[in-house]
Image (cartoon, rainbow, N blue to C red; front, side, top):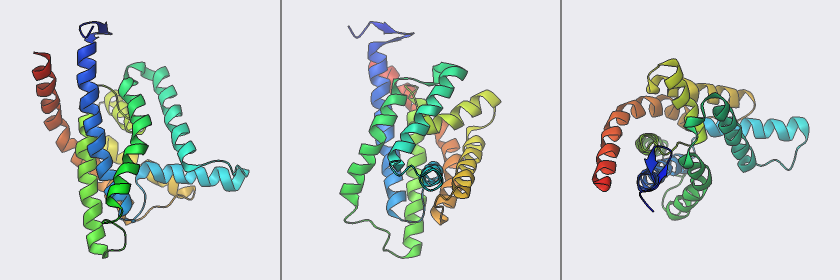
Length: 225
């Protein structure tokens, strides 16, 4: 059964790569939770989500619209565009990221909320944001290099980097800046934490990408042998 193939990979390899993706997703969302609990602003993608949610609610009177619903809607739209442009980017891991990201953040928030909060000193909160961004970058690159799929919002930078032949670190920085700017202009909340995230995640991810590419290759090779 495990030797059966889906595409050019065996079921066993898909299971291994999906497990690696989930490990990376947990690490990444631990970093996201630290970032959010610091209460210094939203990450770039959620600034965009906040802006669109506010615009739909205030300008069009769509009071039933929620942050989570808009987040999911944007992710679905990104996936549809990628399916048209290059469907190879949308894999089982893309669905896993969409379905599991929120619950993982909720779980970490429940565990860390009583001991980590935005009530500390500004210096301590800035350190927490920076640490969260580094952890996010590390986990995100595990997810990307698992090659089992990537979250729709992360796929924007991945696809543009591939298609335009640009370094991922630069592409991610530009994409995050555009998310932040667009969201802010529509009324999303951006703070010093958002700026730290824009400045750190792309460059730090560029450092971790080759490291985790080798790590994933070793793990996949070990469990396949």
